[in-house]
Length: 288
Image (cartoon, rainbow, N blue to C red; front, side, top):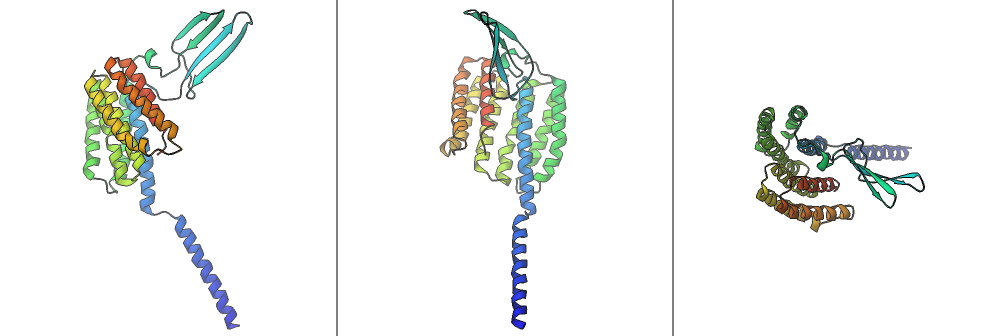
């Protein structure tokens, strides 16, 4: 009877131990939860800063379509086809061509560089920057709980203050410059918290691309070349350690980066904005 009681106690002991191990493994530490939160916040800043930079020149990275409608006279039928990188609705410019009794009707979709007015909508820009300021106050407090150099956090805050001043005075060149400058902090924050090498290298690459983009408005061709050279240097570790999941996107992004570099000598702003848009869209597709 006593031996049976001991066996029962052992059974419950091992059951309790197993339960504690299982629940212990499933529960995350405060540090892990904070790291996950900061990762989401950095992703937010990544997306928000790029969107704000693009908005200055009415560039949209939303999915877009180039649609054509073929109307064959003999058959009196309509055929619609599209080449796309996603969705998107709206109208901007239209054109028709005739060939072999077939009319092809084109309509450009939102975000097309050549049909966009590149005069900055300052009211919208100021609203976006003010919202960024509101979000940053919470993100800043989370970053202060990490091992990130506190100067890198306070410097972001100071640069954000300067950005607000430039936006208020509607200084386009410096607003672009300081938006790009804020982006430079993101890889530093990743290094200090998440420690994801691919994500860090990707953010460093995009940071240099943002610098180059900001200089297009200034006609700073040499500066653009230097920034894109740095972008290539930052991107090479990703190219050299490519994964199966990212193989296509990494190779395509590298080709687009080289095309961006080779186009600088043409000194054509619209062309460079198109090259930039294609490159940053592809970089955003790389999984890190």
